[in-house]
Length: 476
Image 1 (cartoon, helix red, strand yellow):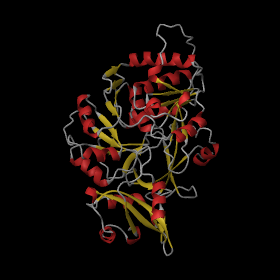
Image 2 (cartoon, rainbow, N blue to C red):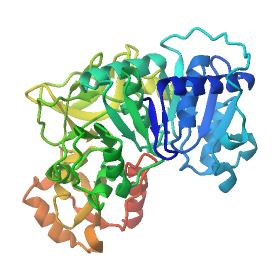
Image 3 (tube, rainbow, N blue to C red):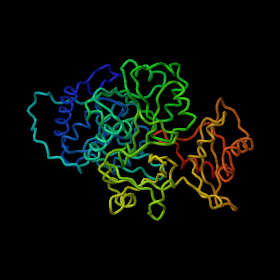
Image 4 (cartoon, rainbow, N blue to C red):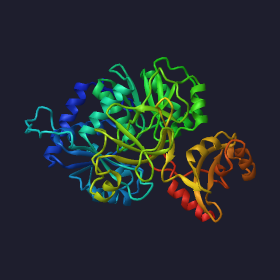
């Protein structure tokens, strides 16, 4: 079984998915899609997107799954950059008209060629450096960037993931994260297709239903972002026994220690993943033989070369914090029609500058410390927001937190913690700081505490720190 489409209650064998992709391939070819072309798709999680991905690959075209959370103006900007030959969508063009609605063809309005039609079947030769997919990043530091993922990258990630995570054809995973992000495609879907495993396709994430689907479809491993895990904690079925589930991997953002502890206390095996659209996305792996502390994501997957460097690009000593640079066949080809940002991200000798800060443990495993652009210096000391956030999340009244560096006339920069609370409580800033001082060095304790009802988020579910910084400046 290649795909179990839960929404439509249909099982697609590999043979059936292959035949469906062939119909899409013929339809695209008749619309002028050729090698090197782009096909844009704006849709929720559905079998059409998966068949389109396979069909585009056969033609040497690239699928561009678009973020349906974006406003029409934002979508227009991306479409203008991509210049797709075909734009496809589900029924959202009818229910919420797009600014470029006349360009879009709805799935329900088209008729695929009959499989028996005699359509010219000559297909181009494909090479590892041909682009298979373009995925747009969340755009927390400016305009979204279209990361070009090649067939070589997808294949190398599939092999490395299956090998590193010890997956097999007997594994089955739920896919509930959006297919406009790498998590939905390349954490498990394409690796398991390479291994002959199965994916369970959900239209979206519903905390009350998710665990039941895992049990009903006999899922063996699962991926969830921390926001989804937080929602699951409040679900009625939380803690139910799932005899086939071996482990859950948390990724997409740092998993708070308290959250990881609560997941494990419910009886589930939790691993922490780490990666990015531009490389992998699976960069590290662990095995059943290792129990790692919070924040430690394991050892490099096969093929990946890693360096930890200082701001001058020099390797840091073992145990010190440095920016992660990665190189290997899992690296993307660059940003679509954006050579300046591509050159900024990739060195002349092929290293991708991730912007993430990590350190190596004595056993060689890697610990995530935060983002280079998020780190700030207070009184000459480096402060890593992820470390401070992990401690503040242990406070019984705090539900979510983001720590930012803000200017200070004496210390250069100090911390500002933006928090939400449990049960709409109101926290006293002085009390929180006093509590944190018993757990953190004085220079790490935020000098300001700002409480908000919710934290702004990007389309990926990550906290939008750029918006938070604007809110904090406005508050100041």
